Amino acid sequence: MSKKNIIELNQISKNYERKIALSSLSFVVEKGETIALIGPSGAGKTTLLNMLASNFEPSSGEIFIDGRPLSQLTDRKKRAKKIGIIRQQFDLVGQLAVIHNVLAGRLADWGLGKSLLNLFIPQERQAATQALTRVGLPDKMYERTSNLSGGEQQRVALARLLMQKPEIILADEPVASLDPSRAEDILEMLTKIAKEEQQTVIASLHSVEYARKYFSRLIALKNGELFFDLPADQVTNKQLQELYQLKELK
Ligand SMILES: Nc1ncnc2c1ncn2[C@@H]1O[C@H](COP(=O)(O)OP(=O)(O)O)[C@@H](O)[C@H]1O
Ligand SMILES: [Mg+2]
Image (cartoon, rainbow, N blue to C red; front, side, top):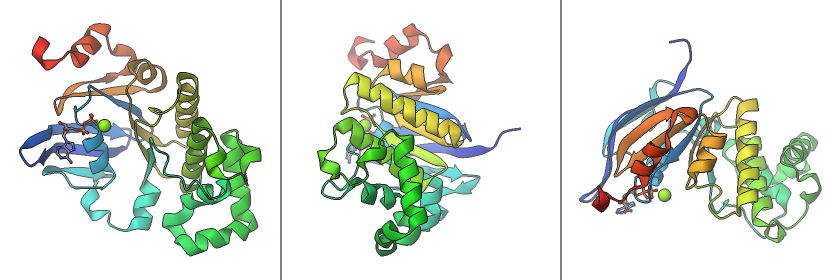
């Protein structure tokens, strides 16, 4: 093994009472891979991302990060350095200025008070300016966040992620609420940043087209099971048709 396995899933299952959301899922992720999670609604994508984000534990099986059980990564600051999350609804505080939301990327590091104080520390302001410049919003620093468009707000969320600098980025339908050109803009930026920072990305996506275009590997789930796991350029249209076919039509 020449490359480092940053994530390893070993026979992960998750039940919600009697519903089996994920069934005995295993795969390994190398550092720097960009993975799109695809599959029909209800396939288990959000459940999987929630477990990777430590929102809840699997019913059985184990997740390893850098070879160590995720369940032992309980220190919030250490976890924030490892794993960052970008959500469909951006999780920004609308009434605050953009710069506050960007600096919040440091929250897990330093705590809320210090993070707001850091607004006045030149290095931090400079880092936030750089992050905003990288996402193409250098002039929006003091704008009220809620005044920005959806696409701009998702860029602010990316700038916040640049401040956090996690090794792994998880994203659940990060562009679902954006129009197609904004969506492509964000995916292009996200995958470009990840490449530059050697970050690992796992993002669930509705659009197979975007998944193939921007990600290196596609993991398809169906009914809580692994349907295929392939390099993006090896996925065939037939496989995609079968993936999205309704159960009743089989
Ligand atoms: N909190 C919950 N309670 C009960 N069932 C749930 C819950 N969350 C998800 N499920 C079920 O688990 C399955 C997987 O859901 P989910 O992970 O949200 O799929 P996806 O994100 O691929 O659409 C679905 O059948 C869904 O109805
Ligand atoms: Mg979902």
